[in-house]
Length: 402
Image 1: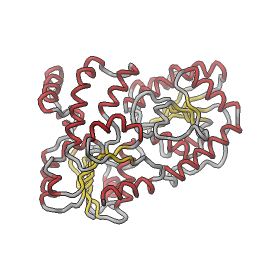
Image 2: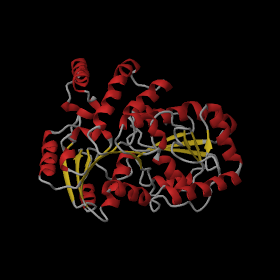
Image 3: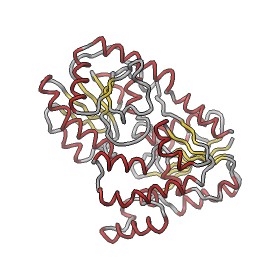
């Protein structure tokens, strides 16, 4: 099978965020048995070595320059213009800014030339490159949605974490309309959790809706050799992503201080690439270390007593939760942080959603080595049996070939 994968996000290295990780491991699996052509965008920070490494993983790699903020019209006039365009076209600025005439022309030529039997659109924002007419030329045109833009915005407004509530309330019905419209271009829709069905069942209509969960590379995240004990917390994620920034602030400013009243030596490591100024400032708080990009996330997980994932926004399975479980680190997380995971019967993680619940659950972890050992073993078992990239790739491959 000849597969064209479209991803404006350059999916390498697969350590920078959920989009890169999911796209890379799915293409890596598909490339074992099929001809995979990846068309993507390259930002200035992507090195030649990274391009060469990714190129070796696919049959053909095609890169175009990634649009930058400098390409957008600045100031209030620019914002008004982008919102007017959203109203007129139904496509949000978060998608239109990725548009590249040269990349679109290349994709058009590739499809019209009959070079592919299937198209995958990796993340819904890449739907801008898929024309409705492709369905007449290609048997399978699939969008791997990752998460609902509409659902995420609803979640942010409900939790009071929206950056610009007035703007976002105006955008809400537009995003709902947008998701209904773009879904019609595809033969199949792919989501990551059963919970996502509440947003996409109505949108999908008669279009098949499939669940393909995320996975973990068990070589990159080996099971730790020993429980380090102590009172160390870790949170992992791309630190320029709004959901992770909100989580880091919530953890450092609201959860850690009362925890340190009970455990004065408690520490928190915020591990992840591109920390914003807000996240960097958290490093000035007692007990908080902001690492920035690190050579090995697994090493920081192995050193931690507990991994805390107090996510309040963001849909889909969280790679950070899966990776912590794979590494054998016991997890305390919110309902959002545990989305898509069966962790309650038997207990594989502790669930918390308020500051008091977090302090109590983390305290249990600190005080009970036996609990940490049990959750560590059960968490790893869950990943090995259910959440590997091999399993996810097999399901994805089946969708594309049937």
